[in-house]
Length: 119
Length: 112
Image 1 (cartoon, chains in turn purple, blue):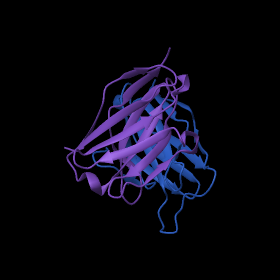
Image 2: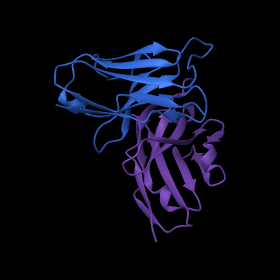
Image 3: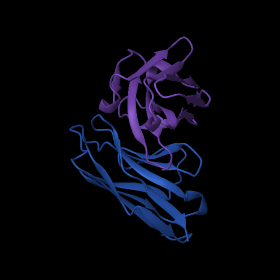
């Protein structure tokens, strides 16, 4: 079945970087994109950006520009999201989701990766 | 950025009764291809969000037919014909017409 398996929880100090992985299976990886969405504790959903797997094109939320990089490795069907210069307000659950090719809805979600930023 | 609003933010419902959630956008979500780029998600307690409705009115695979979506332009509605206990959680609308993709604040459905 189609699934996205994310890497485990991380605890980082302010100023550090984190790289979250999202391994896809059950579908043709290059045929879709991957979106990243985060959710701070007790808050709503925030779109971070996406990557088109077949050509590597990315689009990031303006507020994260310069701190975030999304990549994909087609040989391992794994997408990655790296966030640098971490701050306490980056503490959140980070989700990857399969992005439909034409209409951009997110039809399959990973279980989420908790990233805690604390000194 | 397109701002999404939802009402109500909290929705207590008796099992078996209908429920309705409204979602409005600060600009039209109607693309010139005729589709409204508006989706609905449900996040059950302790779980990831999952897709309920895409393109305003198309039910996602495996979603019970008691869920339906309607609307066009800037005003949309998610309806549950008969609420069941398993429907509790937070419902989000989301627009994908333009980046940044934006979500509504969420509507928390609880069982009375």
